[in-house]
Image 1 (tube, helix red, strand yellow):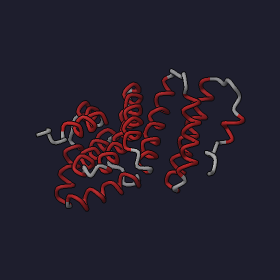
Image 2 (cartoon, helix red, strand yellow; image 1 turned 90 degrees about the horizontal axis):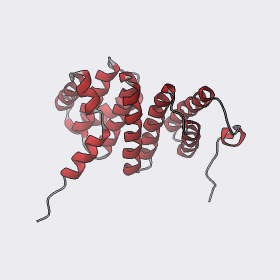
Image 3 (cartoon, one colour; image 1 turned 180 degrees about the vertical axis):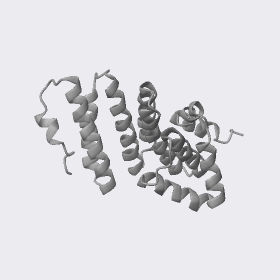
Image 4 (cartoon, one colour; image 1 turned 30 degrees about the vertical axis):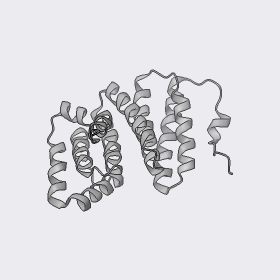
Length: 201
């Protein structure tokens, strides 16, 4: 059995670094992890995200929450790729909390896109399309260059049909800012999953 890969920075990183340097290192790791996720190298992506979380440990700086949002979103993506729905939910909730602390709506849109992926993984394509629309509202514009969002949109259209998918997307897109922030909260999806279970007879 192969050992878990470790980034060179795990070995070479000095025991203490200035906060800004650690945040920059974490940012580099999380962007590289996203690239590796697109390539399908999940083990390397996991090692990079572990590095990023190590760098952010104890960092309460404003920039740290921006990077924590990115880490949470990427970790959720990784968990979804491996079928770990509870892990994805935990990562999304951590990313969402960090994004809310920043007050930065565009960065919160990243959490909304991965929440859409989480909903889609459960076969909840209407919720997925609504979340994609909410992500667009938070971002301030449609983003046709986001390959993950485009793929999620394609899946929603295949499952719901063009008209129903467009209507669900529009529902999220036309939310006001405060409602879009609330809609992006991944805890809402978990609560709906629990209450959607049939009551015992």
